[in-house]
Length: 338
Ligand code: UD1
Image (cartoon, rainbow, N blue to C red):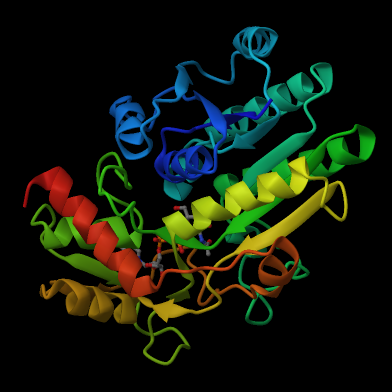
């Protein structure tokens, strides 16, 4: 029995992970409410892997539907992506974020207990570290007071998982992502934000495709070498593979404790201006941009210490930031027909 439930499996990181799981021989069932994804992705996954996964469309906030799903489907593990993820929206509507991101986890964990499902991978974020005291960031770095309700839901969810792992037979791994970018090499799946992109790379590719006039660089007066913020940009295909490895760790009972945490990043920091230059180089396109005020809530610099992920999880990134940018552009060109 190697059927794996992927919640939010039609979303950006979820869809790449479904592809990686299927390529490793896992059978996948996806739950997605299509609130921020398109059903078309299902067929695109089928096009890449030759297998169209089982798909159940419903909202995980509806407990009776969660219960019904688990009474009808037997799964060996769960990778839980389904969540609201826009920082700004969470500031305007915190209760939506607490309702969506917390209820769905609790209902899934109740189902795990009832149906003896022991293996759970959680989609967390480096946002839990806030502005770190030192770089690179290890998993031992303190979790700082969250700046946004979105970030707070990630922290609370990790606490819920930790408590549940202590009290039940659940084994969980929380994966703290740095900045996922890029798309599958087939350009069949990628990031497709609704409305104006809030994240850097989709804004860059939409600007290059002519959908946006220019990129706004949020501040060039930070205490960094070129004054712009530094992040650890990781190729989404590398990130997806880490989920398969983490799942296998649990299924093969190789985990060192019931609740483990791993940073998923490249270990290298790039500034916003470096990303722009790299994008221009790999695409041979000039990117129009202007420097504007800092964006409230942005941290100055974050990048991962990947020692634990490399040596304990046995995973490391294979793709470069340049490859990630090229693939993001390949995806944008394909969907816009440019
Ligand atoms: C943040 C969180 C991340 C979360 C994500 C959700 C941190 C360190 N990271 O990512 O965990 O999952 O939000 O959206 O808290 N930028 C511009 N112009 C733009 C857009 C972005 O200059 O139009 C800059 C930002 O100031 C930042 C960098 O690009 O320095 C990356 O921004 P973005 O892609 O939004 O990701 P984070 O804010 O790092």
